[in-house]
Image (cartoon, rainbow, N blue to C red):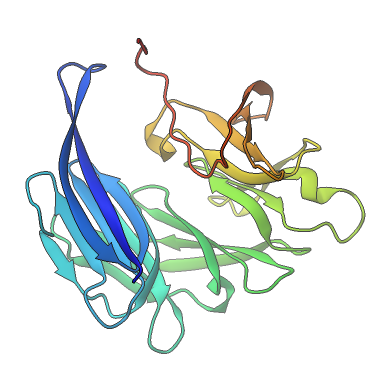
Length: 274
């Protein structure tokens, strides 16, 4: 079948920069559509509407401490210290957002986001107040939907109207993307667009002249001091990584691997030794 072997590790700091990595357990789970972590907890969503599709593990258990069906087919998950957000498709084929309190797992919000959120591609819990969802309902449009937890308001806007997004990621505040295609002959598909979801407006455009397989903000969202964007150069191998400053895309470094790069995690708060 489509079972996935999920290994769960815990990090226990002896000091701020000297953790011990301890294997906790291994779980066999099918139909995983998303995984995210909070201190001492692991959150898993399964792409099924019929059985329990939101599972929560902690560092002390070898089975879920919470297992529930959230009455939709989950597609995306994001968590910060306070909130857990899940976006999925409900029984009416609407895009639905559910927000949970990470301490009690009670439902704080349950809302339909509207047709501009169709075909979601990326979700971010940006703050204690705001949740962002990027979507591309068609081949030639890219939308951003902002949900405000405090007043339950929804704001949606088209952020690019020539194509969908090819490579993209959030940096904790902004949404970075490279268009899928350039339909006007200006090489826009080698540009990086930086969009500000808070103000719902374009923040900057960077003409890098490079086509990317992935954009990866590798510093763990808004909780890291690692302010660099990684661009995986599109090629037959997809193994070259360009490292840019997050705020103005100045090239600071690059490296080559022998394998395709899809995930990166980086930080520089602690020294590294061998």
